[in-house]
Image (cartoon, rainbow, N blue to C red; front, top):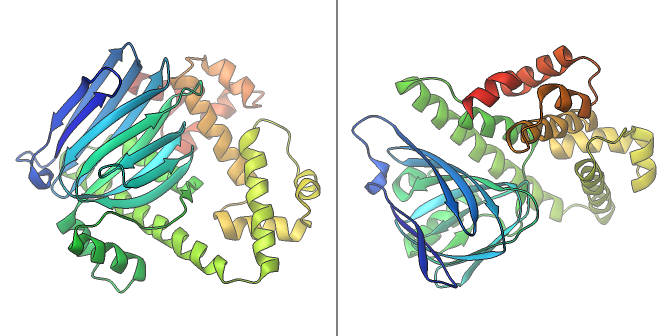
Length: 331
């Protein structure tokens, strides 16, 4: 896959990369990392690849809004996960528009990339995980009888860009866990490749399941759609201030739901309880504070509401598989 990033205003090449066809490698799997300091801002990037699959994780901290021209030549299906920040992309001669807010995901296909990425300064790192699947790899998955896969394959056969779902999905706590497993996998060699591939396939399964649920919601009764909107509002309240002392009674009162609909509906829609989701948000924020803002473990434990740092460390390890100290050493 050939990739070139060019800063639009000055026509300056910022990054250039060439990967082998179908991501083949004689080593079973390869990995690469780099850090870039530029007048636009700072960036870090880690990637790994093996036949059929390329996974990349990137962070960008901008000093100002930027427009980056992207050129890439290798038809791929991309599983995109926007972990932080907002971005807007215009691909394939600016005819395919992709907008992502934080904690959103989608799956899209483009036979080639020639377009513009717009990234805005919002005082947080823009962070994303992308999984690229070759056409042949995706076709093997898509032989199953599923209308969403079928539509994507039809577009691949025609060489037309496509998006699996018209609306971006929301990254659930289970998806977050799989993303962490991909990013912080300590296995070596063939076992690491198997673990990464397994997590990628499970992530795709969760994406497609969520899109199917969204499609089913559209044909539900107006009353159910109103309840779904209210549950989405509950999720937004949690995300806007995860460290507030939220209560079920308070959330129900703010959104006009009764306790039963709040507890049952939230778990059905998001796959976890209200407080399970809140705990995940706090752990994700703790990871951000440790990695991006370089807070001490004691400071983060206190901020997350833990009276004892040992309890925070135990909860953090249960969530991410590593202690806060181990995470810092690995970053």
